[in-house]
Image (tube, rainbow, N blue to C red; front, side, top):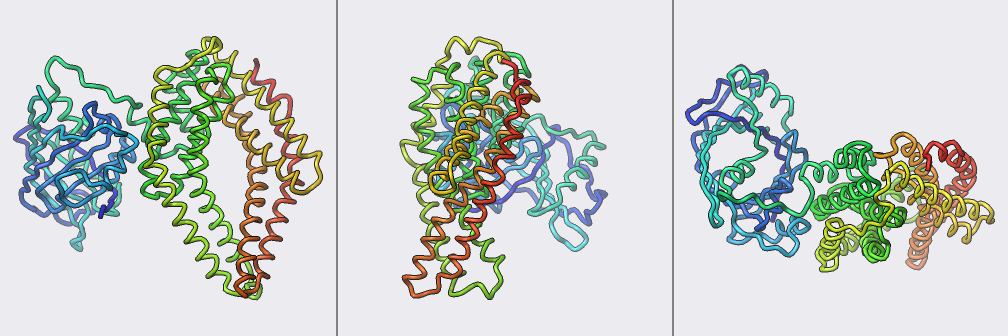
Length: 537
């Protein structure tokens, strides 16, 4: 069974004969305990083209020490030395649980031993006045051996400082200040493996590049994939501010979405909060960009890929929608006076939520393990490696991109006006749902254009998001009403009172009616001519 811990550590370069500076004066440290020397033997596994290393992911089989076994380290923040370390028991082959977590990187490629590190770890424990562990500090004498043909060897020493579980990160700064005074500086290598790969590469051969994007961008997007500002930052870095063609900007945006999908895969498999939603957002952004910018990319090529992205988003939506509904109903029930809770409402809600949630979770994992999903990832890589650019792709972004935004706006305007012209009821509900999808597409188009167009695109996207959010709340109430109706019917058939479920249904109707009343004002603000005029064309 795999276990996870959050690892926060820093590494420092030292000479072969260097000694550990005295750390007893570090604020908060009561005593430094000598824990002796531990011999560690670690074999790092990767694909022949080092896909894991390119993503700053390490997979090793280690013997020696208190935590021998398989260790998978997934980066959380490379700059801060934060990683999630997942342990599995010692075995000859890579444990299936860990293999699943690197599937989006590895795909169908074989994993094999790449580098062996033998470390003599001179370990110290930094404890507080009560003897509680604050951090582990060690001097590691490392010998690295490349296990592939033509590989070399290397040796070095380094200081490693690892924060104890739930420790205060500020302690690392205090320790570093002490080390700096002793002339010790932070390592330029992100990990032992990174240093080993650089120093043991076969002579006369360049290190092979993995097919995916740089790790730091992938980590940032995996952590904040749903944040439009994080995506815009990644695109600006890739293109270089406002420079480049319209095609350059669009491809940078699409690569950011691809990277988000790939880097979020392990988080979804681990069931981390909001990961399913963020992965779904990335698929929708990419599909939406294919549609909005079809003058830049040939849609005869992108449409089939968009269909597969639609499939993935729908499959992820089962898990996400169940999560949102369960939270919505739980909050609604908790807010009701006890006198209005007639029958076993809480129990029925728990059974419904747990059962449907387990089914959704199982289905999501099956999708991520499917050949169809892995084929989609390969297809995205191939499309971005050889994009089907149209003539408009060579135009300046300030000329080509606004046209797509204005076209999406016109599409949205038609749908909003159609919805407003209808009387309340199912037909209007459907029309507002179609308008919501158009608003989301216009918003994503604006976000994609923001790195090139700046503030005008940001304002456009913000107004489109306001419309989308209102229409999204309305659609949520439509979906919630249907679910509440089903729960009420089940309660009635079981001989329970359906009063509370009817009350919840009425609340959802009221939400929908309120959003319909708000729509004209929100749309009037979003449809101001000056917002579109600022985009240019």
